[in-house]
Image 1 (tube, helix red, strand yellow):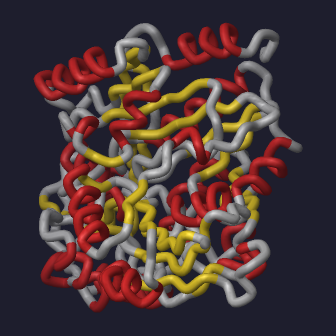
Image 2 (cartoon, one colour):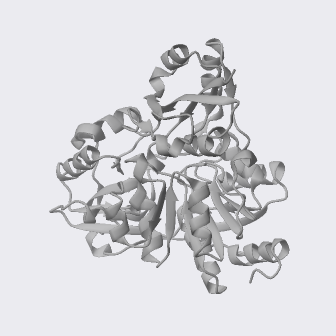
Length: 444
């Protein structure tokens, strides 16, 4: 008898776990996925062409709020938790509900789902969403280029559209993003790498994605999402920490796993963090992963038109995931507005329209910032309407995506970009190259 399985997810880790652990495993039959965290990703089916044999109709995706019904309806034996950036207590509350229904609850070990590459792999992960993975990945890309290596970035999945068309995606231009109808959230991750002349892979089937990436790469960079663990087995594991949220490195799933797996621990945002908070993070790293080399980094923010910020009434549009489920009340845009002398941060909460109004209800911790949410055309439209409803002198865009390419606004727009900078010795480049020399002789 096959065990009947539900995979709890958020359109990313759940699909990967199915592909590498369940798809061709005769012991299990996956009856359904449940979806949470991202609005509007339920109601679809995981396509039959991605399922392998035995799933001619694909696999239904329900909203997680229907979990009790789904367990009962399918007479489920096992529920697998497969998404990230949630408190440990949250995971165990879900486990209690599942166990009360008579099913087993499973967290799959990180190494079981890591695919091995024929090329060196450097993973960049984090203990929370919004720690600064993206600029760290870009820094690693530049380090490898300086060593004369062709590096390709593979991004954690964000398959929010037509799943049957997202098996393997390659992005090397803005046209590629338009062709794949990328959401704002996808553009936030891909655009900065494309702007550097880099190549990004993403999609659903990461075995196929890796094999394609290996054809054009000397080194593969795994660019993690949320605080998830790597999909590829890393030769060097980099984990980024945020001292604005001290202690979170031990409180969130699976970010604590990333802390324990780290070869290099990057304590970021040293330019804006309180020293006592840095001490908390540093103490936890040294206590629980003493083998990790600690690197200190800054996240300098630069705006392209400072004259449109100074002494002006500014609406700050922040990176969506950082200030929603990342639980930060503000992000780089707020820092930039204050640093560049804005007269006032316009509070957009009373101006929110449609689905953006729902975001504020769901995340009441949000401060006077507008999260750049755009998982659907309707949400993008409501974001535009929310911006237009705000009385401001300028819009300060702190999302890495240039949303002016997908919406026209009458108000002046200013972009804030943040990057990686070492904040002392040893540098990230020095220690990364030393580890690669030790583990992969002749990689240079």
